[in-house]
Image 1 (cartoon, helix red, strand yellow):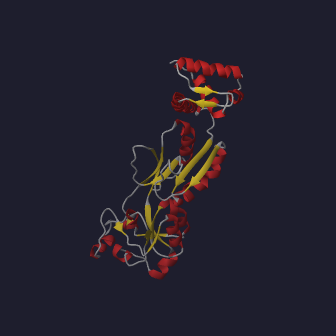
Image 2: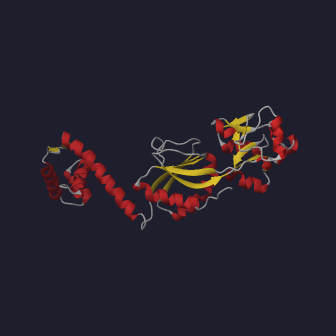
Image 3: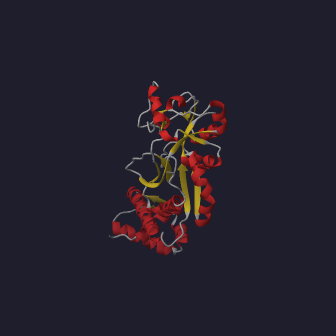
Length: 311
């Protein structure tokens, strides 16, 4: 290889700084040293990269092509250096994490203060989208989602798993009665999601004699789930949780959202004998990038260690 990375750095810095003098100051080199490095680079490539005038520098056509490749090479070198050093240095820089609002509120927010203490150099940015974020378009480094995931372009790491339970508030049950069968459940005010449709497939099946009474209903349950037809629907699981707490009806929610409410008696589980065993995987997805590796791996190791498998 004719060209060194030092010469590439000089060339890119001259372009970014706008002059040889400014580049020399930035690189802490002499003006003559920077000028010689540029001349040496052009001689090795046997092509003019810059047109020098008394007032400014202008890239030639070959210089524009070479600049693009030089930037890519230097970026790859920076990535490689961070990949090697990340085990002995504290991660730093901005890290953007996206998750659905319920997971963000119940599983990430409670641990942010401890994360900031452990990794003071990482600038954490949190966003919430209910559906899978386009990592490039929304400038997201890590997206956390629940359920099946397939995307060959992304790397996925399993953080845990969650079950769902059918729940209602004691006040609602006192006023409307407690459903004992799936047929009775359909007579209640069900709270569900506006989208996607599969979110309203509840993990209830023919698991007990009580549940088998639902076969008399015109829309029987299947081993794959009970299809709810919501009388009240919302786009956010957290909104549905608040509606259930307010006594607005019966909902089916992930355990990580309702664990504290169930422990405190604010919500009560229903039809546990008809509940189908279910484990919804919790994934963190991200692009492979050595430049982000230290921040990404630090966050995933930290948050993964604090998540329970809600079995």
